[in-house]
Image (tube, rainbow, N blue to C red; front, side, top):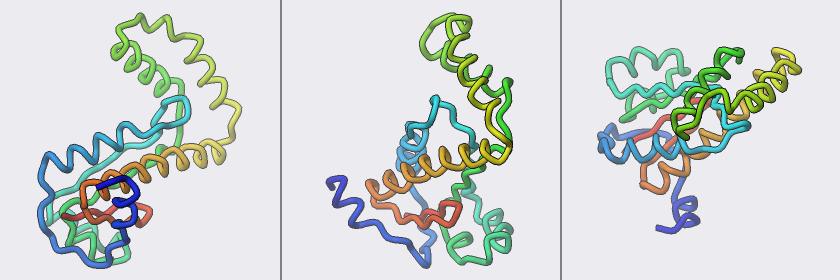
Length: 162
């Protein structure tokens, strides 16, 4: 299916059937999410995947009792960070250095640029920026699910099913 056909196929599912998403399909969707672009390449969010039915049902009251939470194959939660510090930037620099096989010190200017940029933001501005980066990843997840013909319903969280 072409990208446009996948996007035309996609819709917000009101009820789920509980069919299990194959592990390889779920991996593809989450890998696409990891490949989503973000400002500085920094991803100020965590992704939590809950496939256990009992846990999803326990969480359902916290999601306005939406039936999709309990009925889905997986609940994918994007948890935006409340703050970003030099520690997170340093960890990110370490990841880049390892991926590229370069000394972490060679990234000092980039780290300084990121740290300088985030220090100039208020806590509210930083949270808004982080939320925008999270929504980019959510968009990639929705497109990836559609390309795999997996139903998905965004609800400030992403609820998906096969």
